[in-house]
Length: 255
Length: 233
Image (cartoon, rainbow over all chains, first blue to last red; front, side, top):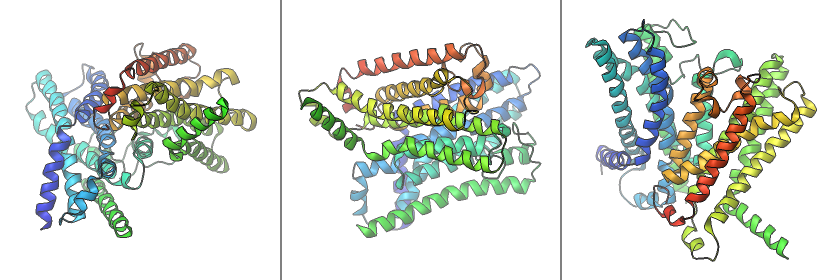
């Protein structure tokens, strides 16, 4: 059986399974309610323009929705193991790596559906308030460059790491990591990844492509640094999936 | 004999829960102590080291308790068997919750006493009041974690919601400390506003809400067959 057809089959199956999960919708809607309240507080100022509203929308989406998406995706492989689905799938001729990539892409795409719908609601509000049709294109560009790489990054690690960690332990570490590496203010004076290209909330892309400063960082990046940060985040997510694949192969060989 | 049986029962429940879940609080406490020691050696200003340790007490250990308890609330491989026994299921469930919660609270109490003994410049409150620093958020996140996991029937969703609330409050702490509607459920009042007038009220409100959440979880479990449905069933 060839790799693309196995990947496609796993992707399709995982997508439809994931999109029917009530918890995905519930968690992302609850998370977005809190961020919308804060977003409205930020744009309530009369001097705020449509561009500011779009940038804050993309920024808050990148801060919080990847956390919800990542935490909900953390039980995918653990669930297969608990229900012994992995043992049944191992008897099929399709390769484990192709299945894993399909699982990652399918579950991530399904998680992106509610994220995109929530984002579009925000964009609809901006269009109704500012009557600026150019906002639509800007909203598309900001979504692709700011929250999307962060969601892919969070999803990749959340699918991969629970292979070696128990789900609750992964969730505790992931929440702590997200705050420490992405949102921790310099007030704490603790070394952190917030100012590096590993910040998954997109400060490099935001400043490089849209010249909109990210809360407490002043990076002055070039466009190439913005592109590099996106490639790094997406590349790391696939690296995590590859590491999980190698671990599962090793585990299967030991059985 | 009866005491021996009870101890046996407790030991049995600890084995069912697994030692890994009990290792989480001490592992976190040791990690924070190690980080503080590194900063201390690096001559970092004492107030930052104090903030780090208070964050460990008020933010990290309570979050761990909440996420671990949401897993315990919905995972039980022998649920069908338990329901055929002449025991009240919710008593067993609450015994398991108590084991994890009491263990976490015990670790936090020990760590607090160690702080007062060896680093008395860290606690920002007197000994009695400082206990509320960790007690209130631990109970609140535990109650919220258990109830969310039972109602949503998914440990992943419950952990996700707790994680998002936690990150929101840490990131927008000024908003939570200043807005009237968010003050009663602001979990990190000691870390960010230790001298605020609402500090004690906030702690008491968190504890009261936590008790309401735990009572709601107790009521929810009066019909344990609800546990047969959902993602983690």
